[in-house]
Length: 263
Image (cartoon, rainbow, N blue to C red; front, top):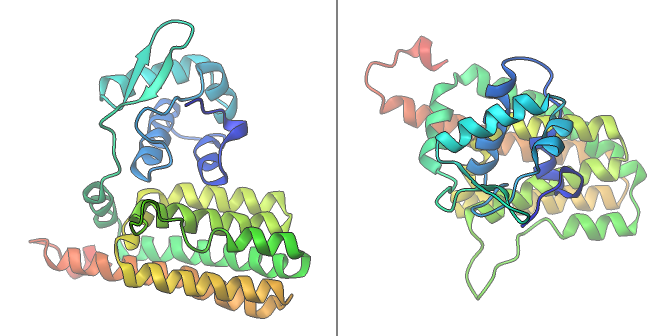
């Protein structure tokens, strides 16, 4: 399956935002790795070619070529030669809750709280603006992301829930009709990366998020900016609180962790 940055979903577009600073090759690799970990890029999916990738990320083709070489060395991608060739996500590349949990435990409670605070502020602003600018078509679109579709009579997977929730918040930003706010939401989605895979393994959490998303949608539909902002803050805080609780539980089972290190 071909993947062009211009044709990507809003969640996947976060992967292809321009890189502003840091080690460029390492950052390109990190973006692809995070996209695989969160399920935005799936086994067998074709990456943009070197020129497309370089243009989307704002780096040189040499940088993307080196990054793709590193990812091949890690076994994360495979390259096929010929007219129908290109770089593809490896067949055995799957999101890993274990790696997501390891990343969570690498952070301090303050770092997790700070990420949540920034995310909450931007998301609430988007919802407040969306409530002033929404129309009937916007509401129908939002409701399409409240719960993921379940296939073959089976319940939706944690990954499907995570992607649906991500797209919901990006749709709120789209309803706000502010390119600047939408870009910031995309960056925050990328920053949260693998962490957001973890809570959606909890069915009770999934249902609570769906209920809060419905409340956000209802507030936007009634053009109640205050309620839209409040419900969105609650929505984001629910995720932050889950991550903080999981972090605390993980630290409690890590020998040698001091209280200062945990905070």
